[in-house]
Length: 470
Image (cartoon, rainbow, N blue to C red; front, side):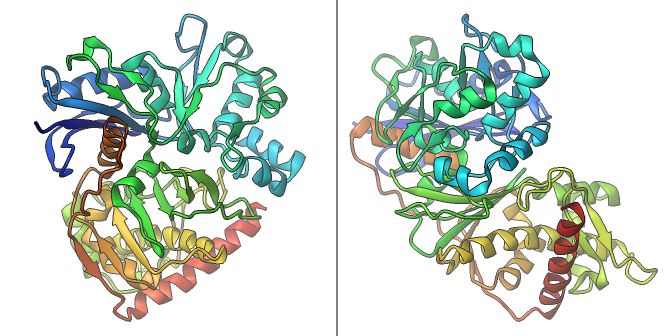
């Protein structure tokens, strides 16, 4: 008798649920529900969205489900009291209010010190800096903290009652050493003033527990350890050496998979763990697809017309140079930066050129991340392009020449949810299934002189801004 597994992707913007055939990896049903907008959220909203997406996917009443797993947005701080009630809204990865705390952490010990201990430099995204912010700005709430967890951990707790996490998500907290496989409680003591309860870190195929009966799937359904969203996507794509995943969504991420942890002395690269026992060096930009959608809104057009405008522009955007740091930035680490538009003249300031400059700015921000990986001797031979922004034909046009390598666009799938489902199948059957990667398009560099000209101007403008902001 065939069986199914359920993969959950609880992202910044929404919750997606897929029901997948355990043997073939075919998606049989799916559902989704939106999350509230903003950089903080009541975790109860994630649970409501999960229940809605769960019902829409037709999961209740299925008697063939053998496993469930959750992939979630990384870094977020979910702090609860002794009753399990959040002491405040969860702070999400893209909330930069803890930038002063992260800066003090880096100044006190230096980047190298942090990289040796937790594989990442202090940034506002990581959980530890958020806890430091909570201690300084909401001391009454901080005093009530009994346990701290990440968004996917919180949902796993609701599914099966287990207080657990996995290496991939723990490695983004700022107080977990993925290379040595243990927490660093002394960092919590130093920056939060206490060591709250922390979830047990499970192995990649270790079951967290069994699904509660209220989810409507019968008894004995195993719940996996879950994973961070990027680790889940990499698991779904079954990365080979030399392949790098570039995901363009709310954030932009650039991810490779390595057997050993490459330490970036500058702290630009986060040394995450992956979902198989290896490592996932990762770079993240705060600004990605929303740069294009915001520019489209400014121009008063939908995304289809925005694409037409961008493709009709001069190849180098007519001399316009756009730095896309509309919400601050993480790579480079410029949390107080704002966007900049240079090269404005009466000739260059056309709707077409502005659209093209926005597209090229996203491509160049991601290209900067690829350059950092190359500097760590991580091979970059092919890019796999995924995420909602990957559907933009205007972005696809410029990426191969901006990156300097071929770009493969796998068939459209919910890769984060599919990676969670693959983990669930591993937990339920004891074997990591081999599901074929969806066929897609291959895009090769075409010698686009305009893209190269923009790249040179963009690099100069970015370096000037970094020097200005110190």
